Amino acid sequence: MCVAGNEMSSSAPEVLGAGSNGLSVWVSSRREAAMASSTTPVSFLAPPLEQLRHLAEELRSLLPRVRVGEAQETAEEFNREMFWRRLNEAAMKVSGEATVLTTLFSKIPSPSPQETQRICEQVHIATEEVIAAYYTFPKDQGITLRKLVRNAVLDIVDGTAQLLDALLAAPSQSPENGDLISCNSVSVACQQVAEIPKDNKAAALLMLTKSVDLVKDAHEEMEQAVEECDPYCGLLDDSEDNSDSHHNEDGVGLPSNRDSYWSEEDQALITPCLALVRASRASLKKIRILVAENGRKDQVAQLDDIVDISDEISPSVDDLVLSVYPPVCHLTVRITSAKLVSVLIKALEITKKRRHIENC
Image 1 (tube, helix red, strand yellow):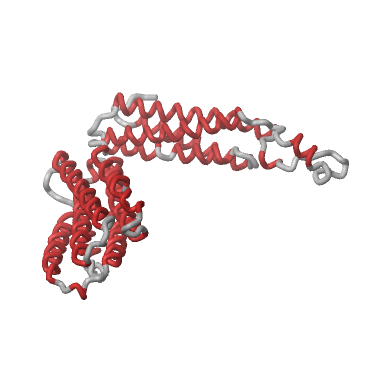
Image 2 (spheres, one colour; image 1 turned 90 degrees about the horizontal axis):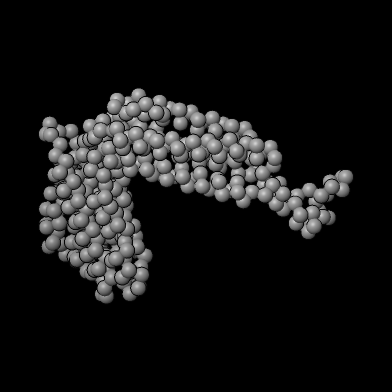
């Protein structure tokens, strides 16, 4: 990175795509560049806020590569303990550098261009080290777990970019700026690294638990809506308050809010839909229990398959719940319910077919 206002070198994308080794080389080159630039005249350095703006842009340019980046291929056996230690240390380094950055820009006067260049280089290098650590995590350790690691790294990089945005938006004398030291999203994201499950079975259970909770919320929301349902809600008010404007040719009062309540035909659909949502919740809980009791840590691919199909249940439940809110399109309800049934059947079948997972 060149915090003097220049763009990232054209070779950077290629180096990043090469994985951890390429990143290590680039990090080393950036350190050398930072040392060489220490004698750069002030007149050639961009203003502090401009340097922050360039750093935020460069960090955001890293996000797409992290999302699609492949794991580094190596003949060496993966050392799980070393990986987690490296990732945690890199995350804590980002948190520390972010705190230093925030402190510098919370004081009056603002840091000099040279001070800004130094801290920006350190933040950029620390962020690259987190990404480099992620690239050493192989897919054979579990796609589910790798996604959790990837998301944690994305949160750190994006959180750092958001912190830079906040520093740019808040002047040094603003009280909001001082609050960033304790509550910025970078620290939160870095602390979450230590909470990531350490094996794919634990990662699968975490994701299944989240799916159960999401379906539980949807189920309770739908139950509450049914309990509070009054099919005649609005009829009295409409006929009394708006009698002049809501009569048909025969003089019969009609409600003006037909689209805000369930008709008798609608209610006939709601009961089976609610039962289907309840069955979805029960099925997910059963899948989670089976994985917890019978799944093994070395069943990496099998666990990934179960999580993949189970991840489809919650969105399908949401689609069904949304479809039963007034005004109800009966065709949409039937389509969404059929889709949910299909997903549930597939999830249960996949769970039963996995080795060492007992039949449902």
